[in-house]
Length: 218
Image (cartoon, rainbow, N blue to C red; front, side):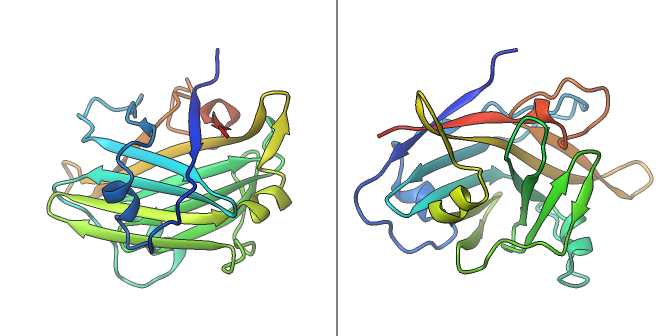
């Protein structure tokens, strides 16, 4: 199966301060990802728009998520609470074998659950992205929320995520969303949404077939 490819354009002018919806508001000409699907659920998916670009020092990204009822578990600020909340996710892999890969899961309050992983969902929550190399913001409006961030190109290269081949610089990335809804038992259960269909019988983003390719243009 041919990889899905997203073209990451370079932006030369200075980025405005991140507010949660700066990229969605001020960078309307960027390439977008909108073809998100839920292979395991027939519930209609509300629109999701992903955008990204880069400059000399940073990779920038943005999710705009339509949602009439954003659910956020605010019992505390632990990973367990984020894990029970509506969120967007980016995974970056070093290689096809996922040895290792890195996960960023972000809810509508800009709370970040970041961890390093190995195959078979072997998660290392003791690892975190260097907070001097990453910034996350969010913004909630009527019937939608925004998440945006920037990650230093240096940190992506140091982790061997940002690589180069004969076509130029690239990364292998997964884009996802978890949407919690009330089931018939009045309990919240997730709908799992993905950019790339991993073609597995049950929801699982933690495998190589759920990743696409981000190609950096000059």
